View 1 (cartoon, rainbow, N blue to C red):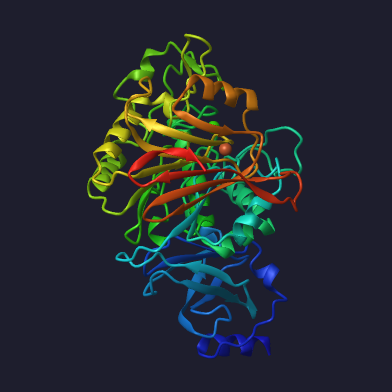
View 2 (cartoon, rainbow, N blue to C red; view 1 turned 90 degrees about the vertical axis):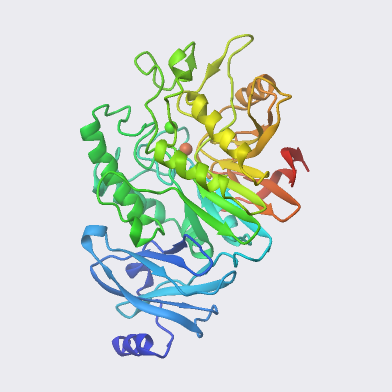
Length: 490
Ligand code: FE
Ligand code: CA
């Protein structure tokens, strides 16, 4: 009976399918991503090889199906399914599901990007750093309930190793180095119902940071493995597992240690979104022969070498070209980490974190020069990585407060990962006047709402990251007026 219903379901009629086998067939939920005006990517991962049917509809009961098909779950890609759906209508929600062995997946909702010629308001979540052991994913349950165009996730989707204090749950394995280690880690994270809810509620636009491979890796080497041949084999495994578990298009399926993740999205006349990859192509840490693991840099001349790159020459040229031709109201850069200079030196000393943009100040200068040269004068930079919330004014010269602010930066906290103590945040604000606000020892995400006149950014923080049912509240709000870069508390 079930078998026949299933066959009828995919051949024309949409019949209700039992949810009984749902958890077994679709243990990691469903997801969508890469929203364009007429296309999205649908994702799931199933338990066994074979054909998986999918359908996408204009209504949440899936009665007005506009496209359906079948995709093959293959062991070599961990039975992950990536469907590139084309021919959709812009700026509207769609609902989708997968069907396998008489069971239907949960219904996911997605949304296409607006028509390129329209100026509808936009809302995004900016999020990062979901260390599974350090807290529950209550933030994702709240993000699922937000009204959004997309979730922007800027890295540390998994953590390759255990760390932190007062853990509430534990990784199933040890440090990830092999393909199966990474696959198991993604599967464990994605078994979380709140994370599944956030994926099922919104399309995600993703980029990665270091923990998807290993902490503080730089291009072709990592701190645990400075041998590029060995490290690139690990990177290939990590990148493959990343692709397998993200709503990324088939065209990005990796065939080795490289994956061109950076990209550009258009949201009507209001925003052009650039997602950057500052890990895959970056130069090694400055002064790494003498740099102590986890310690900042002081008196390191190599830091200022103009040959040091964060994005790599190709991505840098691609970014410059995109910024030159930008034509929306806002440029939005979604990237990994805090971009503003954050001098930690007490008194007259200057001390910088080697792994962030402060380790690559000339590359940052080039990027901000490119931003300043864009015909679009309103640029927001959104980031993650530092496990705290920040609002900063990005300057062409951070040493001169009077120089113009070329972009406004917001870092959207961390979903769970533990951050710096509040006194370090206070010290950074005191030493770096272009840093307008900082908030630590709390977890959550940022909400960015854009229209033609302003950007409104809210820092949403959990009451208790150790409580899976925690409430969330807006801790800080900022406004950036179009034509007047800089974060103003609202
Ligand atoms: Fe992190
Ligand atoms: Ca790191």
